Amino acid sequence: MTESTQTRLTVDETGAGMRLDRWLATTVPGLSRARLQVLIEDGHVCVDGVVRKAAHRLQGGEGVDVEIPPAPPEELRPEPIALTIVHEDDDVLVVDKPAGMVVHPGAGVSHGTLAAAVLAHAPATAGVGGPRRPGVVHRLDKGTSGLLVVAKTPAAYYTLVAQLAARTVTREYLAVVHGRVAANEGRIEAPIGRDPIHRQRMAIRPEGKGRRAITRFRVLERFAGFTLVEARLETGRTHQIRVHLASLGHPVVGDEAYGRGRPRLPIAFEGVALHAARLAFVHPMTQKRMEFAAPVPPRMERLLSHVRNTTSATV
Image 1 (tube, rainbow, N blue to C red):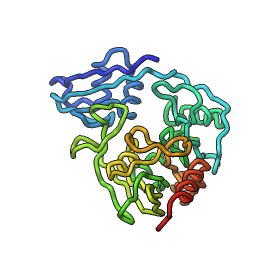
Image 2 (spheres, rainbow, N blue to C red):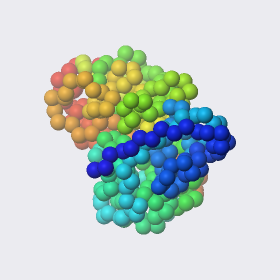
Image 3 (cartoon, rainbow, N blue to C red):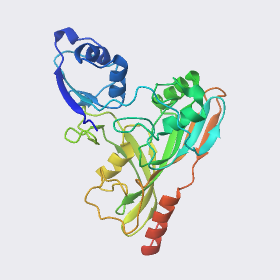
Image 4 (cartoon, one colour):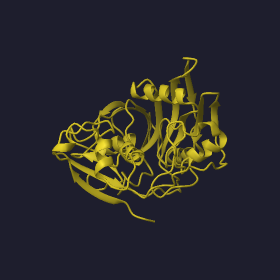
């Protein structure tokens, strides 16, 4: 597999006032503007250490870091992979993604994605939102299971994206974390950005170096060495819940990126112990509020059963 390449650039005076994507298109040879926009959206471009949007206006003199992973195939091919469909109508599709499935193609992953399965199930989603992520409004990490909504039409896509930006979409997760969380509930507000050393990971960054991120949590059950928490996103940054809970000293069980050094579980466990359990949004066409729930998957039920049977649970 071809490795990612790292490029360090400096914005000269002629770049002052230009959009980030347009400046990169004139500066980085061999990459189309569409490809650059995907890199920017996926957090592979930093301006003075901060992940910026494609429309960000440059001032001149900034340092721009570009990570270029191997390009996935340009054409997404439909794959007849079974989906757990929670709701479907002419405009939206709500699915319960299993742990281990990647949402859309990216560096090193070209097959077996949820996007390819959606394209096979609903061919009309082709071109909705993006060529390799048909209708995908928001994402879940590979190791995370649970609910996500897919738009089946351009109108539904842009309406749902606007709801996400306005923070009117409700996304609640269940997580089993290491350690006993002391507070019964809390609010974590800490900027998140690309880890300056480990570029495949995210990290809490100083003010001005990361994007605003807010997570609310509530303890549901405590055990001797673990806690079951409910987490609610107010913003949607990459790896947000995992990074925020790890910053409290309570990384999610099974999270090898942010929970290194924690003892291994005495039972086999797939993915991370994070499940998108509830999702609510306003239907883009009917304007009615829709709410969905996904049951705790067997992998997490087995984990909870194990910790309940080996420790004394307290609320």
